[in-house]
Length: 403
Ligand SMILES: Cc1ncc(COP(=O)(O)O)c(C=O)c1O
Image (tube, rainbow, N blue to C red):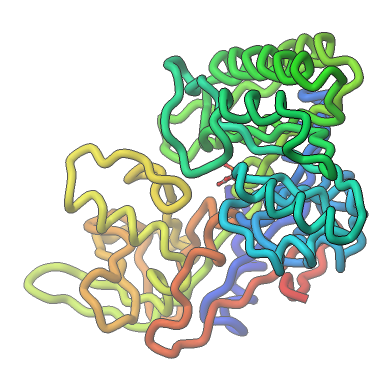
């Protein structure tokens, strides 16, 4: 939470809207996971915030990369990660994606057809290629049997394909990738999941007749958004990770994380441009909300359609996911509706909220802006300037996060 508003106010004079990612938060989140998930290797899910300053900091802390596109593979490679620390897993890769990613990363095939295409490529080059396979297990997080998914290969189809030794003579399937859902706050659910995935990996090892090099159990590691959310107890994951490792002693255990490390590290700040009263409602007009940081405005939109909207990650978590804070510290409060400057009535970030009184030139800060924030926002709409992305280093310097 913001304790000292002075650094923000200085930046507001320079930038009408900006993200600020705090390296000390980023690294303390990463270190907590490294400690509590001892024995697992962490991969940072670049998609949630690909700002190079964020990547550099996390890679220097020892995290590898979960890349969801060739662009992310290239980004991680350009920042110095070796191929064995870049895992490229996404549906719908093109042949050009596969060819370019092959020397830079561990490719995780998302379908049998994709594995066939990698096989053809490897045969054409006279190579044997190690790959991972994304699996859609007969398992649902929190209970249940799983079901249809656009991600990965159904467990039974994968086992059957691997049993046919002639299908992929130039491929060696060395690892499995599973990711079922994001934003889980119950450690017991993740614990059960880890044990089920160990079981699954053992079944694959039996069919393959050898040990897997890696088992990537994806993410799921959630963060509290709503005031009533209780933080995920990561210390309770230490024992499940240890138990999984004990069953697969020669297999690297990979855990992906995006929002857990990056989400709380970021704040979005936008300036008050105007203020008016209409039919008794006080509107505070902010420089950039929906187009600068989409998710808080999307929550307002979604709540208009349903009393209890279901989460739809990474666009919508819950209606009360973000705190909007006034940065002027006025002792006087005022009930206001906060809107952005776009020419659409949908550009509302908070309705009828009590905040310290805001004047033109002041600013508000919105929390949880470190993940699925800048990347998801429609900055091209209305030809406005995108918000700056800044990085507060551990030693107090403010850098351009995008360089
Ligand atoms: C395969 C995969 N791994 C990891 C993540 C990261 O999830 P989170 O940011 O919740 O950690 C996602 C998010 O969509 C994903 O699809």
